[in-house]
Amino acid sequence: LDTFDFAPDRVWQEPWRLLTAHFLHLTQLHWLLNGLAFAMLTLLFANYFTVRTFLNALMIITIGSGVVLTAFGFNQHFVGLSIVNHGLLTMGLLLELQSAETPAQRKLMFLALMLVAGKWFAEFIGLWESFLVAGQVQHIWLLHGLGILFGILAAWLHNRRLAKLAQLGGD
Image 1 (cartoon, rainbow, N blue to C red):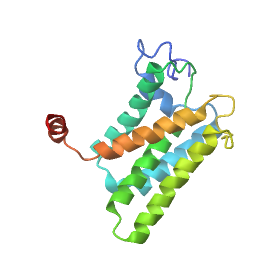
Image 2 (image 1 turned 90 degrees about the vertical axis):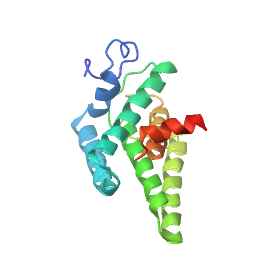
Image 3 (image 1 turned 135 degrees about the vertical axis):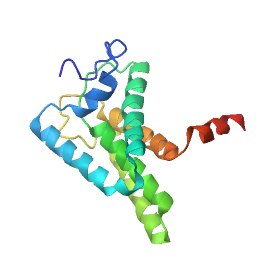
Image 4 (image 1 turned 60 degrees about the vertical axis):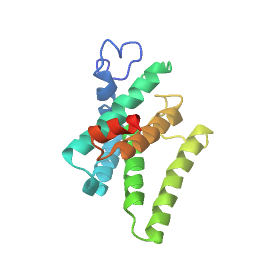
């Protein structure tokens, strides 16, 4: 783990850590549960992705969260897919909300997004602590929150062409 975990003091000299840390785990149970969640989210929202858009989402969530953590002085090591899982869940729910055809579908997706936000808030105020990360990171709410924020960004960027994005700045 020492070569590939998120190590804020070495991330600029060893930039692969921005990506690799998310795919390593401390225990087999940690790996199994995060891997199952990742697989379920991938399958659940697969109809929204091409290989390119899925890899784009992974890059936005992993590298974006790592850069922000480093830029703001986060000084803890971590490994695990929870940032990615929170980002993919948020992105998938937003894409589902966007494509919802009935008011009932929109309400259900909005409720699911509120549950994600509620879980994050419970972590933030200390009411929810995952047994998977016990002892690894003091402020897991920060990691999960960045996953959610970069999931929102990934959803916004999803299927947008670079040329179209460049035009946004010109208006």
